[in-house]
Length: 359
Ligand SMILES: NC(=O)c1ccc[n+]([C@@H]2O[C@H](COP(=O)([O-])OP(=O)(O)OC[C@H]3O[C@@H](n4cnc5c(N)ncnc54)[C@H](O)[C@@H]3O)[C@@H](O)[C@H]2O)c1
Image (cartoon, rainbow, N blue to C red; front, side, top):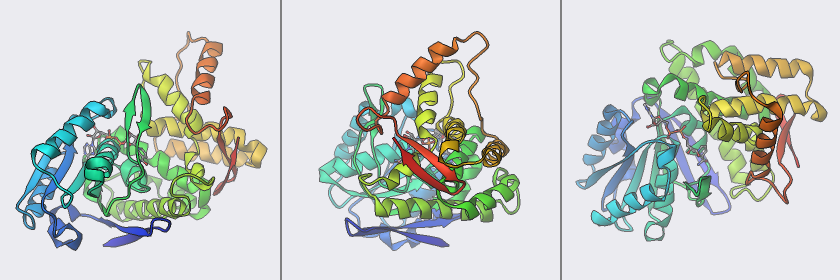
């Protein structure tokens, strides 16, 4: 089993991330699940029953009170109504301070479950079992929780660290193809901002990494997830609550990415988050020439993004008014909550594997 320890220094807390195939059916072997008054499993309707049953049965072996709490999937349900529904359910089953909430799902379940755990009875224990590639490499590490409010993404939230993160690689085999591939945008991002060797690895192994049926898939994807969790946890440890500049580097590709994602949601061609980040990364790479990135490197970034079957541009349609679109995108970027004093934050690449913040 691959085990990585995330050390959050400032709060003197740390938690393990376990990565292995087949972990879901063996949770009873993990001592951290012992000793709770009861356990709630938060999941959504799209998570295959196979995984939910495994988690339920293995936890039942060590705790007689295990309850499934199943919510409606999707970003449109990442809201106060769903949070309310979860609180109500926990109250109905008399969840107390000694109870444990386990989140089995993608970033939506993880973010909302994390928020509930951080606020219910002023904080109860939380274990994250992420089931999408994006959640493996991104949302499950770092302790950001939250939900959307007033049409604004993640407007309400907390920082709250789980007791443990469990990554069973088998969950990747049931993910819809587009959901699976979009996770690689965040993976490529980590390599681009801080690790040239990792970039080379991703370049060399793209054929294996996008094919879950390849005999070497699980071995390679385990290395990728481990590396991403390590990079993110190192950055988060140094800058847990985004006060310094370092955590901002993780936003590479997200300034334009968020704008194009929001724009696309009102068209017939809505982008997934990772797809928008892929487009945003190439955009940021192009404007990184002023920071030192060469034309050759920009071409290479474009080719690698495409080799992961991710988009490099958004199709605005032939009849679109470009000046109108530019104004809308500009407005969206100016409203980004990462901006400081009204100035847009950009993460630029000095070269592949090295980034800097520019306001
Ligand atoms: N907290 C953070 O640091 C952080 C970082 C990045 C993203 N996020 C949040 O994560 C969310 C996106 O997460 P996501 O991409 O995982 O989306 P998601 O949770 O909506 O999952 C995508 C879809 O796949 C389904 N699904 C999940 N796992 C599956 C599996 N193994 N097999 C089949 N279907 C499965 C889900 O039910 C859902 O329909 C956004 O709300 C974003 O804001 C949070």
